Image (cartoon, rainbow, N blue to C red; front, side, top):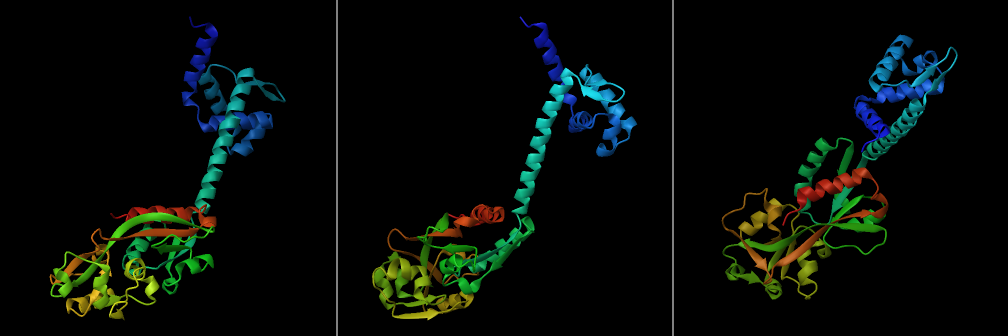
Length: 314
């Protein structure tokens, strides 16, 4: 059995569907100022308009919110409950908007990026252009001179994000896994190694290896396969432009070792073949590395989120 009080409360609750924020501000201001006359200036409305609003409110509620006296307006018991409810709602709204302002304030900043893999410099400009459209308040700079020492530059605050293929061991930094790819040996179809199902580490002893740049420690095939096995190719040439390096390979003057995705923007000759390295393939991981102190910055988090979506390839 539902008693009268419960029914009445339920009826009031249903009537509150129409309650707008302006009504809570109206009740709060009149209660604190003591009258409609004193509230008019604060609410930027005439006394007549405020009286009309209050009258409409009380008619829809079905009870008086204020006791009117000549010199002082005071809340009814029901009015006190509405006043307390309104205070809670308005404080929550103000708090949320302050949080939003803080979030938005953290959405602006400059991010200096570098990568130890030259292949990324072919794809990053397109990503930077996309970020410029989505996040006009984030300024992205590519710092090419940090390519050979991205972690050192990150620790010295010369860059903000490093793209690397191995996690650094430093308590000041944190790493985010991006993706794993495979490195292939890229060669002319008439190269004698093209007859093999896959290349082993010993096959690199007599090759002319074309790399992007020195030092060798920045070259994935050297760091992950050749160096651990103490293999040095017969000849090594550093050619920073991928297009020129491909022409060398097309002329059968050497081989390159790169993931397939790095060559998507190039026209690959039918004379070029891709050979797996090692029976299971030579894999490498990619990580975004940032300073732990930057994790709280929203514009850094926005970069990481979008970079992960853009470059997470299998």
